Length: 109
Image (cartoon, rainbow, N blue to C red; front, side, top):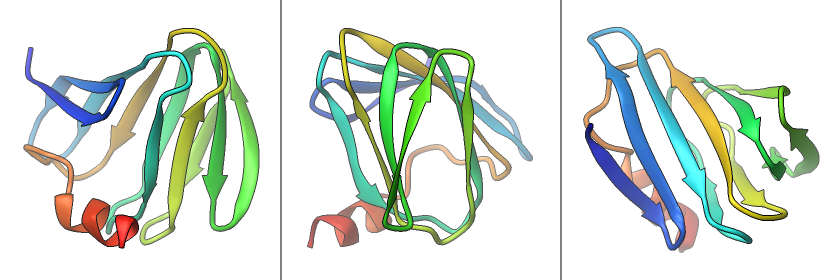
């Protein structure tokens, strides 16, 4: 299974990476977070377990086991694990071999 480290304590495992749809599992260590970023495609995150704070377009939301959030295209967002180890199912419509590092780099600037 192809994996990519997104940040310290955040690892994405690609479950399906077809021409039209990418499905991944993102595992977070306690307190880990994916930094603020945006990309051209929409995305859906479904909490498999744990508790997350999602920042979406300047507002904050709680994501808990069994709940999901839709992130519109070109919308700044981040996600932070609020407790112990936790994981998300992440789905987006465009196949990608890796996360858009340009978007991630812009978010850090």
